[in-house]
Amino acid sequence: MREILGRRRKYLFRRTGKSALIGAALHCATEWQWPVVPGVRLRSDARPPGTRSGRGDRAAPRCSCPDAGCVVPGAHPFEPGLLAATTDARMVRWWWTNRPDAPVILATGGRAPCAVSLPATAGARALAALDHFGVRLGPVVATPTRLALLVAPYDLAELGELLHSRDEVPSSLRFHGDGGYLVLPPSQTGAGAVRWERAPAATSAAPWLPDVATIVDALVTASNRTPDGSRLAY
Image 1 (cartoon, one colour):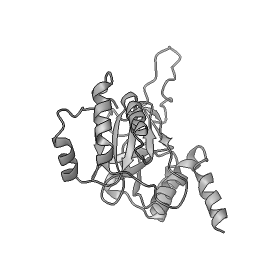
Image 2 (cartoon, rainbow, N blue to C red):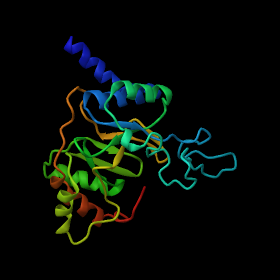
Image 3 (cartoon, helix red, strand yellow):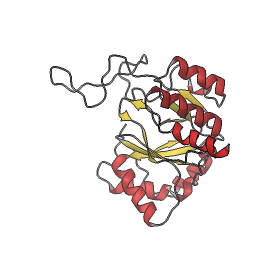
Image 4 (cartoon, rainbow, N blue to C red):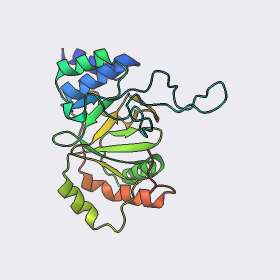
């Protein structure tokens, strides 16, 4: 029986389309106990990133939230808000049954994973450096513009102590801690598809996560040494 369940869990991560979203949301919430909430969807008249209209201009995906100038379309919670994030299977199933194309949003902090994200080019350099030194990494989430490394929960006091001794912390680094959030695969946002750069094992055991202290130096260094690595990029 355990082998059958294992195969079913692995298949969950191979689904495509809307069934993959509800499957991923349920797996994160119930198997890993990661609190999730549906993200705001892209406008129904929005075209995928990179497509063009008949006039040849590049289409800009638009968010369905009230902010006409939203800079992170489809990549944030709105209704319900982040505080509604839960691990309750009934609630998660109801949300994604009614909104099957909603992005999967992880509420970071507390007992849930935290994350540190940075622009994709700097992120690739940081991963290479961490691999070179044999640092064990947890799951890594990728969008066309950014990489996010999931880490064990940390609080603001711990983070402040880590960053206090550094001469410069690039503004492009984002720290997704208590009260923050992160879009998880296989969501589709205005920036493009969200995927696993380093995928967690598709098992019932929650993924292992490194301490933020073991990776923050490499992320700061990579951001400072990469062209435009210190520029805020969504």
